[in-house]
Image (cartoon, rainbow, N blue to C red):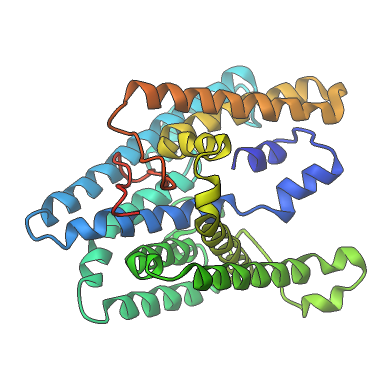
Length: 354
């Protein structure tokens, strides 16, 4: 997500890396949303199955929704003030404070990803309640797909910020599918490595086919696209399927390879970022704006601006590490299981849940 946003801020990576990060391998938003839904299914759904913990679980999710809303307000106000003071954005030096404050409070300003999480986290207890019913998962799946299909013609219906990136009526399908996968997580874990490897291979095959369809025009073979458009805003069905195929491929492949990569420094690096995903996400907004301003101020660096990406990643990792150390041992994950981001809740996965 950080790298994609740096590309969007015109930090120069060179032609190859710019296209690779900004287009060919871009799936961060879909991945983040899917994993959030998956994690709710893995962590909170078993708690809701316990009648003694059900009400406290639902209340914890609603509190988390309110907390994310507060984080959104702080991020939006801070970033807009910095845009005005430092000239980072197109607002100029003159704004009307009261209308701007009104738009922030009504979620019309400041981005719509965190407000999307506010909505979906608040709805999660109702979705989990339905999942506890017989065939509830089928009802949820059919409802979500139906809403998504209707949203293809009315994408901005219920959107808090019109023509932003994450209209809820479309992106809810990615979150809900993640929740359903979390619901089915015990059955997935029970599969053999052979079955998981077949799932991984199938996911990569689908991802490769969708990649060829999307970018075949670059190779002078537009007929391979079959006239299908891949659009992120508003989210199209092929683009959603591309996100999901890459996500499934990464999850299943990582699971199969986990015995070999669990103790590597790369896995530890990723887990450190994942354990504190909400504060890391909030900080990344500031880092991206600052690096975008630096890139605009020093265009002569050319593709050497890629060094800003390494510096940005280092900032986020050090920030996450500090949070990790100061909250230890509570947030320590077992070393033999992968960590899932916890944007929706403060507690990590247990070994049994994983």
